[in-house]
Length: 304
Ligand SMILES: [Zn+2]
Image (cartoon, rainbow, N blue to C red; front, side):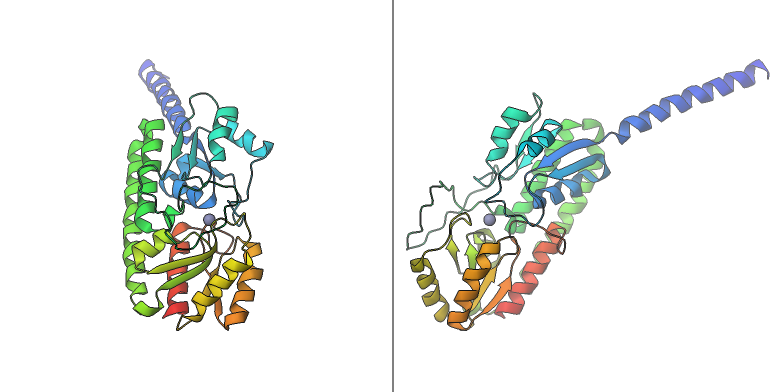
């Protein structure tokens, strides 16, 4: 082998080594821990194959009654980024960050910057010993989910600026999909006549959906699914349902306890029961977009 050729071979090996190591560095994933499954999906949409996302609350579980165990503390200890909803929904992640996360690991509260809707009912709900900051289910209005995605994008870009172009491109594509989703929902729900635009549910989750998509009244049995409804709450809802031209009550898949009450109510008023997704994805509905399309289709089927 002459000098020149061996120089090329060595040069090639050096180049291979350099690019090989760059490729290796790029394959390193950020470990992101979210509180619940809907945030997990939003992080995955932006982070793609550069993030490894874990939801602490498993799909199909009720976030309101869920509590972290040492297993979740271990997941938080390995995280590069923590993502919570805020609004009192998943407050426990703040204490878990303090006790378990590595120093300097950021926590993004995705609802920061959004305006909270308080429920303004004439009746009084039971105080189950919880202090609620209003309805924390911001994500059930698509423009709010777009705000969540912006917060997530900012956090990922800040954490690994070298991957900014990747995150920004994916974020833009996904936000465009969400804008289309919002338009699709608005168009679908136009089929529901004004007098039927009432959503009666088990727990207080749908005020942002109602505000965005033009539902006049949202009623519910319990403020928070940790508590159970009283006879008075049930009586009040029976009266309200009886006034509806088309009495429908919605249950939610993650709330097992709600089924009994909702069936009782529906039996009493000879109304129908439908399922809306609120707080959790599951084996049937695996993404936020699927969930919102399913909800829009269900509302149309139930109320048109
Ligand atoms: Zn909820």
